[in-house]
Amino acid sequence: MPLQQKLTADFYARPDVVTIARDLIGKYFFSSFDGVLTGGMVVETEAYSGTSDAACHAHLGRRTKRTQIMYQQGGVAYVYLIYGIYSLFNIVTNVEGTADAVLIRAIEPLEGIEEMRLRRGLAKVESRLTAGPGLLTQALGISTQHNGTDLSGNEIWFEDRGVTVPEDQIIAGPRVGVAYAGADALLPWRFSLKGSRWVSKAKPNYS
Image: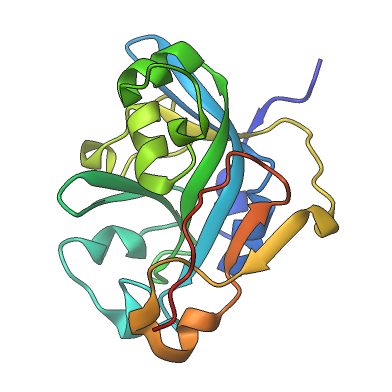
């Protein structure tokens, strides 16, 4: 039987958000609401650093009602809305007072696939089920009401199931939708599992 160990606070509190984003490839992301378990293996992430990254919502110590959660101790959810439609799920990392986060962009669905299909309104299981940050939150039933959720609890959590992803199977490249960040838009802080059909189709835009 494979190891099934919930990621602990120590995993999230490490100081290097880029390392955490890379290490999350091959970990498992789950939600459980009203007894319905859904989730799968993380295949795409992006790192954001509040201290040095112009693409980060909390760049240069910016504190707003939205970003305040990013300054908490690592291991809580930061969920925000884009386009008035899609909720994006991030893990707050590092220690209290340092606003780092990892955006979960895509998972390979493994648990509760039929429930995820219904939540997404799809006629069949296809890559659009969870291949994109706004799609996977719909599939997992996650919304902005889950902002601040403790990831050591039993609603939303991550597991290490003993999967080791070789370095040469992780692709590093620029993040998506951060052209406003100038030179920081080119940072290779987006990580994805090589050859996975579940990685989002979005392309970085530098202009």
